[in-house]
Image (cartoon, rainbow, N blue to C red; front, side):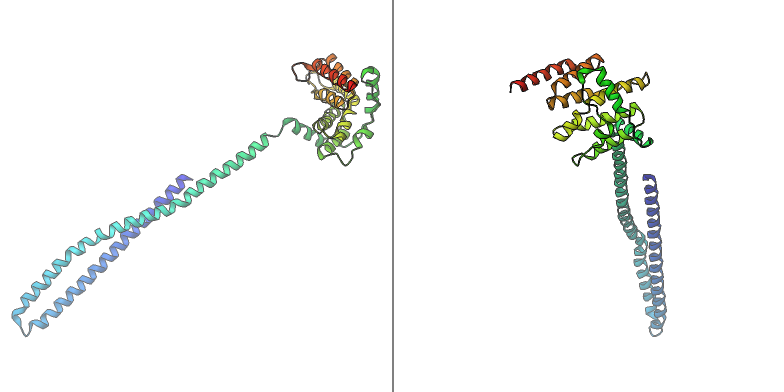
Length: 305
């Protein structure tokens, strides 16, 4: 764009310069024509005056010649007077033309910033959220009814985390007006999942939202009640997943916190012990062992209170 603007400015400058030259030549020719007509008038008037006084004719001729000689330098100086004026006019026009070029550069910078801002927004979207959205769009809606059976199996295999069987239709579909859009979408994703791995990932999203909103009693109670189903789906998804895939397990830490906040300390401790058996960590320095110690302290404090 800068090259185009430079060519345009050069073309405008050449045009104005030629125009100034043409005007100077026309003005010079007009002055020459005017001087020639005045000279012819002087020569035509001198014979009439010379008839009664023939002695004065040479002096009149000399006067006209001297007048023409005196005016001749003025004619030669005309182009020099016009030339500076043309230069000034050319510089003013060039300055006027440069103004939109600066504005255009600023517009280009603004557009570049807008595209970069849009690119930053696209890169700021978490990869996990993109994968979850694509998975939910690609799968058809269906209701899987084998979750209660797996929940019962988990209760039998781990009596420490015993809880009432949690039916999928009753627990995940029974949302009240308190539920936000994020929780509703996570529940819908869980209901439309067709595999144990997909249900496990969707259930983690449900628990994560309840953990995030745990200051609300509805979210706290709803999330804590999912600990039995979560443990059952973890074992099913772990058996179903490819060997090279590693399951994400933030639900153990989040459910332990929810159970502790509902003062269901025994189930929270049992869930942490199960995580230790599976070789999991909660991302802290002390791990689930330190979490068990904190839960036991909270339990003792609640008992003495």
